[in-house]
Image (cartoon, rainbow, N blue to C red; front, side, top):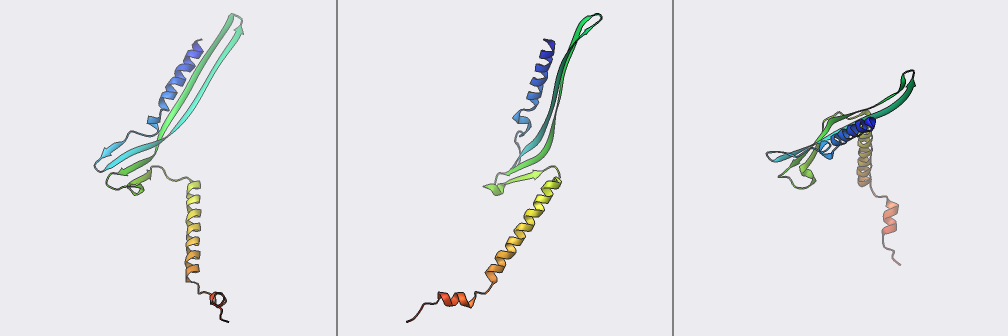
Length: 139
């Protein structure tokens, strides 16, 4: 039963660390801004129990262990005097991963190409055949 108690205590402590208050921080007001921290939480847990029969009788043991880590990843800044989404900024506290950088470059390239095509289609002269088809017919 002692091993079960150890496991229960370990799990309870890890759950305490994983509370929402540790992921989304308490708002901090400074002047015309409110700051809210956002963190990443990692968790590892393990438990084991064993029994053995030896020359001197029976024995056994058990144990549990765990670890949790909290890493800040962003800060949300809410400007009190700017209404709507323009008054909210998310400031990353970690450099972007290689995948995020690649996705950003792809999106940037695609949006640039789409903008060029839209500009070219607006500037293109209308074809005379299409203009003639639109002209009213006289009989």
